[in-house]
Image 1 (cartoon, rainbow, N blue to C red):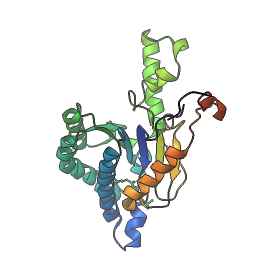
Image 2: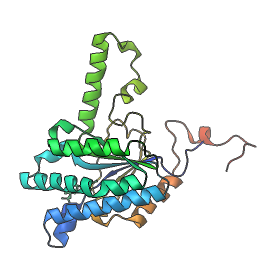
Image 3: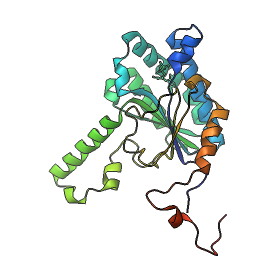
Image 4: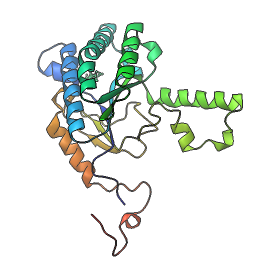
Length: 248
Ligand code: FPP
């Protein structure tokens, strides 16, 4: 049987802020500010569409290589956005979580992230995961270190390590894997995002630049997702309901 038409978890690579700004002869930072507005709107739309988990790639491990001025501006933007948005997210039942190598972030940002997580912990309408200083290889590496430490301590039998054991140590442990990955900005690659967790995700690439990505664009991705048959390695015939069985 095919899973429900609405994805339980959508993950988004928000690309194209810089080009959006350049097209308007504006500085890149203006593109990032517009990107935050687009992110805010998409969280609301996802909640209205009944999507229970949304993961946004806000800053990758590789983004540290950008010019210092841009990195600094992005960090300030994340701080401001957290300060401004947490009340409303909380009031709307959104639980905030962060994944990534937090130790690389400023103490002030880390403290604000922790406080937003603690404050919204009990919310259940939508889990919003923000990937900050995140890389898929970093994630697999940190899971491997945990497994190795447990094996060395004698609390884990290496022969018993399977997919679920690994997934349980990854940054999204406890959440369903993303069903749908959206990447804006015209590139067709994963850029080191959720490498393990996207193994069976449906992929949706659009040329739309992130600040322009709104409800109509999201609905196009969701319609495509609803129409596709997800086989998870099985055949199409295996997924068809047997003759006489209800299919609604
Ligand atoms: C991609 O555009 C965007 C980023 C590298 C990160 C910043 C993302 C935001 C500010 C959006 C929302 C943030 C939050 C807080 C959830 P780009 O600079 O790579 O664009 P380009 O490819 O056109 O240069």
